[in-house]
Length: 336
Length: 150
View 1 (cartoon, helix red, strand yellow):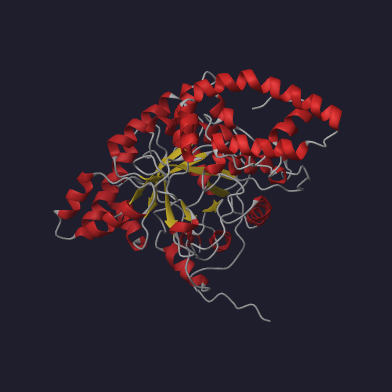
View 2 (cartoon, chains in turn orange, blue):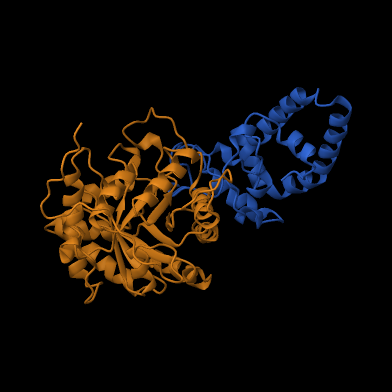
């Protein structure tokens, strides 16, 4: 069997290289550096393809070039089948991007997850996002078995143990443990809202280094949540990247509100979309404005963009928002 | 039983008092029984634990009981069996993402815990369930290990 050559001329296929070790840094990846440098970081979600064509991954990633610091590869988002997040991250890492590997507890037990973490480390993947995962019942394989051997907090604990103690859960030694920068998510909008801060505190105590939130469309609610987070001193312990998204139309917004668990969209957004001539454009305008507002909030270190099926608009929205200032995130084209 | 379970988290403080009072008695009795019978009564004891806790809390016999740390709401009733708080999919009415007719176990747990004297226990990190204890009695294990019921 011959391994096919990579045929995308604009990239050179080489293993991702780790950056030199820095004092006070956990990982040797670029994403952590941007955050620790105090720059406003931008991350975006990449939708893994339903295909074996790796160029589909590269083409989607290239849409973010120069506007995004790190790329999240979702792990069976919405409990639907797609290319695995480990492999998407491996492909991205080989180009030199800074991928964030999402791990959902829904599909793998502790044996599989620890194996994936070692594999990810071998591929210079430096960031992971520990998630509970959407339930199988909302996806395209509702008849599948739920795993949930771990929950997100146990997963954060596990990744920290592997990293800091250099051993598996069993205690067996790992000769070269993966140095992962660990993130997790929080949804500031689910009831009871008071307990969300406690939940966040628990996640940070478990060892989360950065937080990417669920879609934030309700800025007053997010501001309130962030001010409580700052008061508790949690922004000293972890980096916060609130999630923003773009809504293609009122119809999409309504569908998301009714079908995607835990997404809170206030009426004001619906009104704006309804009143617009071009709802898609208005959705993007709202998203860029949300980014600006997020940047103004105390304790925020960046923004996370989830533009499902509108990935081609991410760069323009970041540009319009001006949140990066003069800074241009790393892009492969700069290197070659 | 769903209604008995909701009752437990609603009256978590009273359950806590009863629990704290009875657990040392239960455990020392079990220790004595274990010494005399050398484990011969393990099956009926496990069976009674299943009946009692099953009725009161919808206990799923995970063998890793954390009821008093979770506001007297058994986390194994969460469809995702989350042990450290809710997922991000809680509905606006506080019900479960997977079972819309059921109150989120963690919404129950937080409100139960707030009523309890030891209301900080819920903030302790519970590492994932040890599945090799599944179906076994948490009481017997604690009695043998000389620990308190948690």
